[in-house]
Length: 408
Ligand SMILES: Nc1nc2c(c(=O)[nH]1)N[C@H]1C(S)=C(S)[C@@H](COP(=O)(O)OP(=O)(O)OC[C@H]3O[C@@H](n4cnc5c(N)ncnc54)[C@H](O)[C@@H]3O)O[C@H]1N2
Ligand code: MOO
Ligand SMILES: [Mg+2]
Image 1: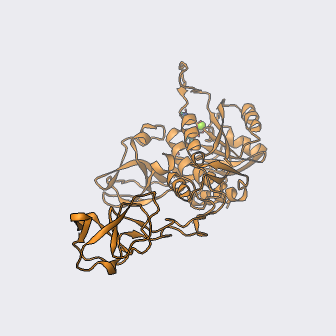
Image 2 (image 1 turned 180 degrees about the horizontal axis):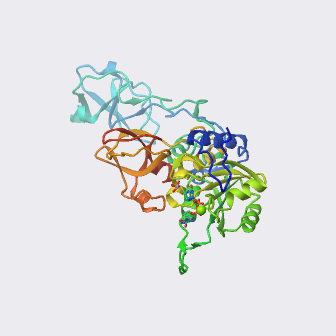
Image 3 (image 1 turned 90 degrees about the horizontal axis):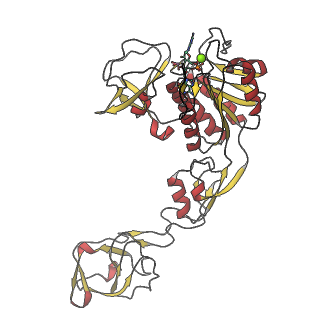
C-alpha cells in the first residue's frame, strides 16, 4: 500500500501510530551527536548526553531525620541520659561519650557510637539537662543511613534523560556544577499564508494575525531547541522553494499551513518536486493534512495551519520527533483513562483529539471544537482522545492527555 497521497488529490489516510513510528524511525536515523557542557542553570530542558554516575555517597554520612537526641540504645535503661554535646547541621560531632546522649538537630551528622535518634516530643528534660525518654525505641530509628539515596559509582541518570528542575536538583545534590548535554536541535520555523500579519501591525481586508509563530517558537524553546524564525512565507511555489532552500543549515524545518489541497497550498508540492514527500494525510482530527518529508536533504514537518491542528500535531508528532532526534527514549505524552463527562453519538472516521478538561473526575470538552478556535486550547487542560469509529455515552472511558507537561 502506498500511504502517500498525491498533493491535490484525495489520498489514503495514514493511521497516527504508523505516521508516528515513521517519524521516530527517521529521527533515530538522524540523531544529534554533538554535545556541549553547560552549567546546571543553562541545562534545563536539554537532554543528558552521558550517564550521570555518582562520585559521592548520598548522604555522605548518617544524619538525623529529627530534632531530638542521639543515643546508644543499650545505654538507655532506667536512668535519664545526660546531654554531652550539641550537634547542629553543618558540624562534625565528636564520638558519643558512653552513657550519654547528644542533643541533635535535623540534618546533623549522627555521632559515632549512637545508633538511634529520638524526637524531642518523646523526651522529658529534667534538671542538669538529663533526658528521660518516654516511648520505646528501636536501633536505627530516625537515622538516615550513609548512601541511602545513592552510593559512589551508581548510575543516577541515564543518557537520553530530559533535564527538568528535579534532574538538575539531583545533579546538584551530587556536587555536579555542569552537565554534558546534546546540542540544541536547530529548527527553522515558517508560518505560511498570504493572509498573515504580525501582531502590532494594522489588519488589512482578509488578513488575520499570525498566532502559530508564537505558539511554535514558544513550544520549541521550551523543548530546548534553537529557533531559527524564518517569518511569514507567502503562498507561492517559487518563494516556498527559495525559503526552504535558504534553511539548508537547520536540523528540521517546521512550518504551519499550506499543506492541504487548496490552490494556495505549496509545501507538499515543493517537497515532492525537490525532495521527498514521505507522509501526507493522517487519520486524525484535527490535523489531517500533516506532511513530512525532506527538502534537499533537510527534514521538514509541515503542520496544518489551523491553530488547534498545529497544537495537536505538534504535541503528538513533532514533539516526539524532536525528542527522539536528541536520543530521548520515552517521547510520548502521558495518557490516562478517564470517564467521559459528555456524549459522542456520531462515530468519526478519524481519531479525534478534543480540547477538554477534568471536572468532577470526568472529561468535559470545550463547546466549540473547530480547529480554528485556539481559545479551546486556552480553556483546556488536555486532549480527550476519541477513537476512530467510537461512539460514547457519559461514563464511557476516553483517553486524556494532559497538556501542561507537553506544552507547558
Ligand atoms: N478540500 C479540502 N479542504 C481542506 C481539507 C481537505 O481535506 N479537503 N482539509 C482541511 C483541514 S482538516 C485543515 S486542518 C486545513 C489545513 O490547511 P493548511 O494546513 O493547508 O493550512 P492553510 O490552508 O494555510 O490554513 C488553514 C487555516 O489556518 C489559518 N492559519 C494558517 N496559518 C496560520 C497562522 N500562522 N496563524 C493563525 N492562523 C493561521 C488560515 O488562515 C486558515 O484559516 O485545510 C482544510 N481544507
Ligand atoms: O484536520 Mo483539520 O486539522 O480538522 O482542522
Ligand atoms: Mg490550505
